[in-house]
Image (cartoon, rainbow, N blue to C red; front, side):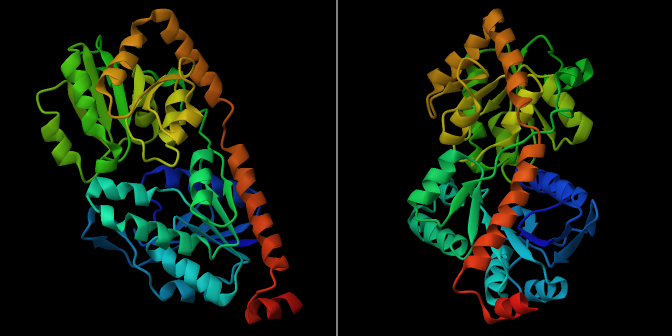
Length: 386
């Protein structure tokens, strides 16, 4: 099978979407399927034998931290050039609009996946009046697809209630050999703790953006002087956050990759996860694989992944006392030992093998739905008779 993946983000960017796509592509190539990735042109031309076709990228005025690609006719040219058996549009929003439009116009089987809760971000950017229009926009895009995917049952329920068509869950996964407790490193711990390794070390890993609600963590540092916080990542709010946390025991590392990131997880005492806007949050599973309990704000996706009192501790969003109480429970040595062991055991259930197999199954399901559709285009009817 030849698969065209059209995505708003790809290498060299680092995020959960890219991580998931990398694993899927590696699996598909091992199964000898052809893969073409159409993504913002950031200089990458190939990945694991998959062709990467770049389309012109630009910096958007509302989000200057990274480059995106606008809808453009080159997407049509590339689809016609490669003539795939199926098109997968990942997170359709900007260039993905062209992917949806031209896949439909040219008569290709189409699958779309929803990874970023953009409508929920609007409140963090004070764009409340546009939320209903945003939901309408994403529903319209996704309902061109023969099959839709999302990354958690909570989001599946929400999208189905919003009348998104034929929504399924693409399961989570983690590199269980790469993220592991044995990566603990005292030099890394010293670095992350600002030279105070005996402190309770909490780590946040992710994009530094308003919707991540990182600012809420300052109250922990105000409440206890024996806590160090490491903020791993970069993003548009970094400068603002550095000012917010000035004078506290906080270390900003910037982006970490590979061995350094594995060490950062394993050398900390717990992952702190304050966001309630995620569709999943792959860093949760990466932390658990590293033997870390997860301290997370309650939301549908976090409650699917973290069992309170077993693999982590949950707190009420916007409730500082609840968050501090959760952190204080880590002082129970027996509980902490159990949390660490249980977190690793839980993560071991979620290698990338299953979700990678699953995406191929969804591709075949999309082809089946397409073949049974009474409204296939003239192009598809011609293809079917060839």
